[in-house]
Length: 241
Image (cartoon, rainbow, N blue to C red; front, side, top):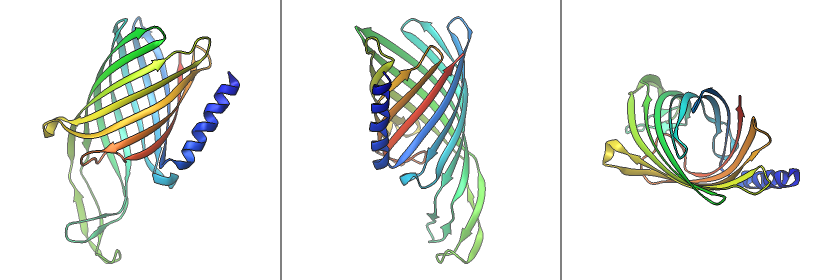
């Protein structure tokens, strides 16, 4: 098992060297009552080429298993995102700044088992609000100060549809998976914003500790102001009480 885990890590490390950014997360989950779990998660993402911090986030919420094949999930996420240099319509320049965002989400996930395969479909509604703030602004030379720029508040309603397939390897802690997730903008007649393609594996050390490693490609179809497209490598850790 250890050799398989080391091989998976080595493969992911090789892929990471070619990826544009790294996403990491750590989650803690504990059972509140029968079928009901409470979770908290911290997330960190790098910029393209691992050149710096793109964003970090903190989440908390609940998930409830209504039936053996049906689960509901709801929570809140605080996002602190780095915005790179930008140019206004008049040619003025806005230097990098940090933008806070607030997100609420609600999900329903159904799953179906066939042998060692598990097929699941998750529908998630999320609302993200970018807070209003003023930021410094400079002329086209990037030196001459201008009046501060007002970044207006903005809300976005998104429906995320994810189809995933997992395979449980006999007598192994590894569970490989592949998924595709489509983002549709509810406020823009269901226009598709982006698509995520993911392949990876989770590994359970014991009943309490597990890790996941994945490669993700994000295809941007519309005007996405909540992330970056391209190649991603991800590493996650989960602890269950």
